[in-house]
Length: 243
Ligand code: FPP
Image (cartoon, rainbow, N blue to C red; front, side):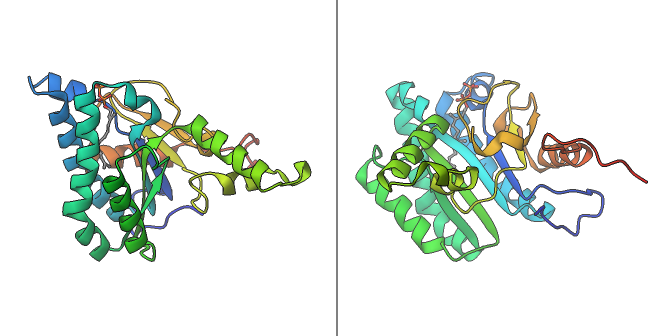
């Protein structure tokens, strides 16, 4: 089901938007700042984008905050990104909860510092009954990793081969219960999927923009949604002829 909105100019609002928040490093570099300053500016931008989702009527937002590949970045940057997640939980959780945001985590928690892990688990538990906006944070997430994890669990549960269906696999993913993304956005001009929601985004519309993530504000989000609204989704079918 697509999202509903009182936003009259946009005909079709995506129910679920997923974002690869790219370009923080280049945003910082172009200002002579350390890379982590770009990640912090990118984090400040989340407020604007979440507000934009509320105004447009987007119900699900998934953010790629830390990939399984990001462990290969310099230690200081990895520590900085972990610190950002912890700061966000410490300083924003109460407000997000008041606003009715449901926080979900997708990815593997095990490799995180135990204190951070507990904070994530607490944030998810505290907000689990909220439904104004479902915010999935992909942190230590990789699409292939997710599929391997699902296959292992399917085998462990001794599911019969004939019972392994498209729908069953979806239920074994970290995103179980979340509808597939309708629109995936990647900022900063890169044209890659980078192991993000590789199963779930099979039929998504993709939107690429050269804008760096810290500058991707409400106006940019609206542009992406307008572009989505103009496109015709066919799911491999042909267009229904109009009478
Ligand atoms: C890609 O930019 C961005 C990341 C690897 C991290 C994105 C994380 C945030 C914005 C923090 C959000 C945090 C939470 C908790 C939701 P890049 O560093 O690859 O940029 P570059 O390609 O210009 O170097």
